[in-house]
Image (tube, rainbow, N blue to C red; front, side, top):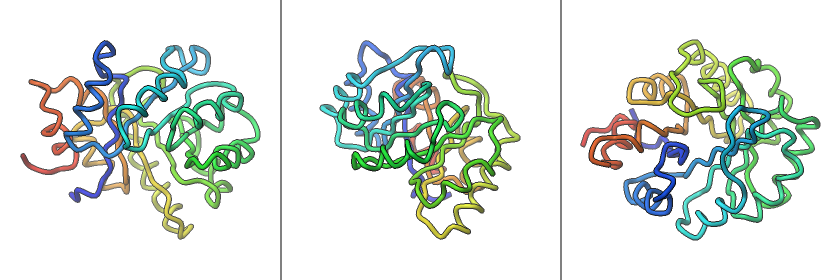
Amino acid sequence: MTSSIKISPSILSADILQLGEEVTSVVQAGADWIHIDVMDGGYVPNITYGPNLVAALRQVTDLPLDVHLMIAPAQPHLKAFAEAGASIITIHPDADIHTHRLICEIKSYGVKAGIALNPGVPVASIEPLLPFIDLILIMTVNPGFGGQSYISEMTNKIRQVRQLIDQSGREIELEVDGGINAETAKRAMEAGATALVAGAAIFTVKDNNYAAAIAQLRGEKR
């Protein structure tokens, strides 16, 4: 396994009362991005964070803030998240309408644009958007909660998207989110992932050894 894989720790599993310290710790441990799951209680059952938290975390780290919007509609909130300091904003095509227009709006703020695919959303649905996006996020669980188990059938979906990206000739990140641990990280990387989101596998590790947890996800030995 190569260490070029990007690791994006999800703060959904971090200690919310020590969030600034938790983010600083994973940054020092070798994280590449910080993943922020935004949930609205409508598109998904849970409710989490807003732009104010993104702005607060931007004061803590210069790393890319990887903002995943699980909200419907997303459009009214794009500018606020961009202005708060998001580096990447990922939306769900089935959570809004006029997906291309939203992608163009995100990019107009100088922010990278991503598309997320839930387990039930077909790969073909994003093919027309390949010329415009910077990231594709494959959900290997149904969104809404942390700590779920990786859906093994999604590994083939990662391979399909990898093939689409390669055929496009564009530099598009292929991110995988859901049930990522040392075993499933290996599967996702072998299928073509370039970035992995991990929550519990990092933030609940014994003795808070985040560096070892991140290294393990990369397939490195510590």
